Length: 87
Image 1 (cartoon, rainbow, N blue to C red):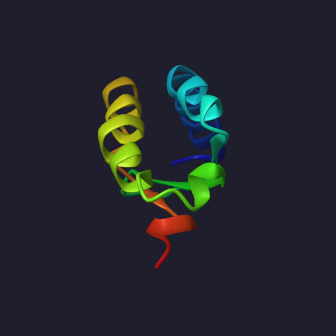
Image 2: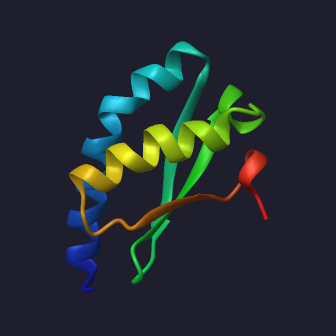
């Protein structure tokens, strides 16, 4: 993907995250987009309470990943680079 395509894709992703972000913020957390690769894997960073929450796995798969993938079909999956999902 070209640099401009990547910028446009990241803007779409941020817009999709706008719907779920208020639910994270209520619990003292948030999420930051780190990168997206050519395979469509979106890398995120948990912020605040989400970083150490044992429900982050559920939140990511059932909430965040579903919301983003349904609105931005180029995103195939979401992976956290920190918190309980860090490798």
